[in-house]
Length: 364
Image (tube, rainbow, N blue to C red; front, side, top):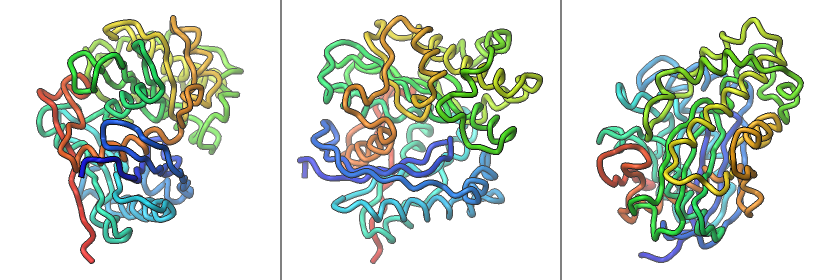
């Protein structure tokens, strides 16, 4: 079967807000239609179970409990999406160490396949890492399809600001994402994770709503400059980060007020993005922002001031910035089943085009 099908994709990011789920009609090359979307927030106690397992690997204490939370939440939200023939399930990243122990996403696709009664494609990152790639980011091939869908004719960047920041430079003039020069993707630096952690520790809230606190603060530029001197920033892309790779930023702003600390952490994220854009083969004509960071006015204003091209939320071109990652794993699920690549040398640094993912089918 080669035609377009309806697929449900689900994503739970490192910001731990909840599970995004979306229906997408695709053949793994093109977007044909966007379908229904759903969201299921993590409860505070669920969030703490997952957070306690960050940095841990399969078999470690707390991982099984985190996986059960992830599976339960995903089953609940995906069961509300009707009409899918298949599911793309990313799981919850707990640890990511591509040059060391590998990559670890909590959640078993077989459990979901049995509960939902549908084939589930999952474990998207392991094959790429095993073959020498970074295993991240994985949304770039979908970003290329999005660029085609919006009718882009010049190079542009999709910037995802979740827990970690990552960007995809796309040249939509080429035929497909596998073509040389079609995409370049890499993690740019911290996204919302340090700021979210700061607000959780200091104020007991999950985020700086709208960026109001950061807008009221003053940036400590010495901390920003120090962040830009970290070894990761000088590495050539493709490259990837674990959520915890920049978690010492919170301790570096210990002496600052809440507002100044928030402003400084936002400035670090912005500066890392600006530094990352220097790697683009051709300067982008536009930056389209998805993920939770686009709701932070301090972050969006900072990007607009730091970058030399227009910066807009993806809603400006008719895309759903909350669901783009969930849609991406629906798209990638079709590519896995149809034996197309899901990553390549210019997205994860793997030596050749790789098709990752495992397929679990219902046992009853």
